[in-house]
Image 1 (cartoon, rainbow, N blue to C red):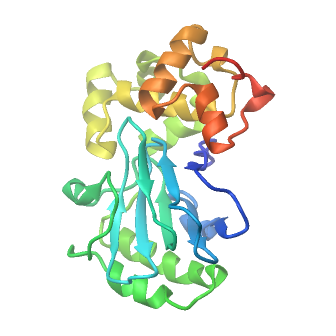
Image 2 (cartoon, rainbow, N blue to C red):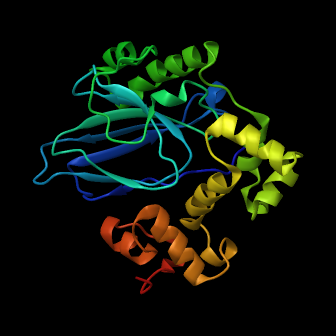
Amino acid sequence: MVTRYDPVVDGFSQRDTQVRYGERPPPKDLADVVHVFWELRTLAPLPADFLYHAVPDACVNLLFNQIDTEVAGVTALHTQATTLNLGTVFHYVGVQFFPGVWQGHRDEVQSRYVGAAYEGTLPLVRTNRQLSGLTFDAMGSVLAELVRWCMAHGQVRGHPLTAAILSRLDAIRTVADMAALSGLSTRQLQRTLRQLTGFTPHDLLKVLRLQQSFRRHHLDLYADQAHFTHAFRRAVGYTPGQYRKAFGVRFPQDRYAGDE
């Protein structure tokens, strides 16, 4: 699958030398299902709590707390952002899957801060212990083996419908476009996307359009400036201009200045 979908990095309240965020691409055999392996950690205690503003992207993450290896989980947002207080010392590692890839139990997916020991059936705690003490580069092989385990046990698999949608985002403006691209009726699309992603076509389109707005001019995606600002604020909790100022995010052509 050749996908154009590249979710943006979420908002960080602090960006300094004591906080490190990194991403690594997956091995080629997992590139159809994994967007990135990622790490977010402090290198020294911070002077104030670190706020992580997670933006909806329709992806599911496997999350590992390297400070307490009993803590792990499956996380995802639906259509609204959330702010997580990570404190002053933290070390998280994760696997980010493309939309529609995660086929595990949906009641196990959390949309809030993960701070308790994992009690599910996935080998997340075992993996977390294997990751302990490794450099981020060395973690790749451990994370890749977990993904392969998930694929072998039916927890993770690619699907031609979501692959087609993600690879043709430029051609999709409406749910009707999405249905036509997939060769399904609107009703079939609704049923299939619900099963694959937990999203209705309309909600998935809102999330994908939001993500694209970080990289493309909003008038390519929304009817006008007011529609865009309303949709962005409803999903993210900020106007685009406020978000840029709060989290140091630079948008193409700096087009949001003065819209707050």
